[in-house]
Image (tube, rainbow, N blue to C red; front, side, top):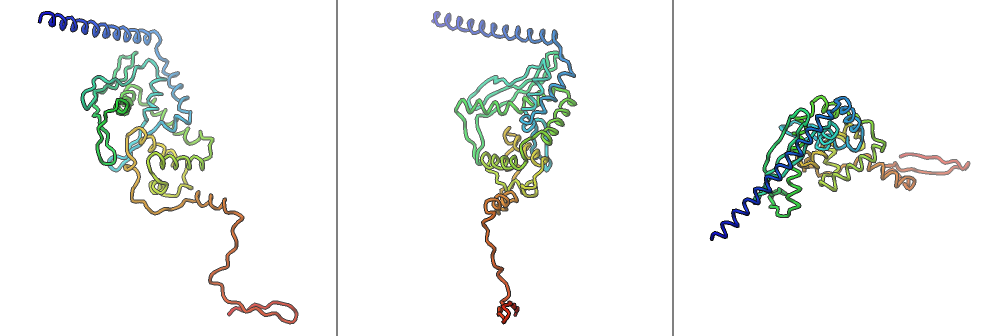
Length: 301
């Protein structure tokens, strides 16, 4: 009995030593980060310029903004991709998502953003049930990979909120404006090809048809402009980040297929030069006779 008590006590002591050592190591790492941040403070103007330069990249601009419906209105804002770029180029900022505890059926995690220069910190602790709603039913998750991806997906939204709570609002607004400008003017690919690519992605990933997108925008895809592509791109980012679902944006009642002018133009290109002239259906009867001078006289009844 005494031997078991001694082993249990020794085990607790070893666990305490390991935990204390780990906490001490983390504290030293934090002190080192703060020291480096104070030794090399950020240049606000250079940080702002780096952010705006990154927002001139078309690939980032396409994924920089999200939108989702709420209460009959549309909510827009920077996506997690843009928030990460803001944090990386703002400098001296520690941010991330940590899983604090994994219980049976749920995980407790924390998202945080910490300005090491000013010691301003934003953090959010949240609980993620190990379940996913699909097709009207709730599915329990037991695969570690599925659980990890679920926690990371939920953590990304909290992380974005933490980062945007640290970065000054005017810097965020300038980044959003630059991304919109890049979307309008920074695409070398023809708009017709980008529209076709967008329609294909929505169909393959989310089952959203061309007719549903046209019904949402209000006119045929052939008339889509850069602004329309930008707005639909925000919806795509919202769907990809899990901020909303396809049913929130597109009506399932759209069943009649309306081919756009793009489809008609494609068909005309394929059949051009192969069409034969057709005789009008309601053409009046003709009485054709030839006179002695081989001239033709046409009489309509």
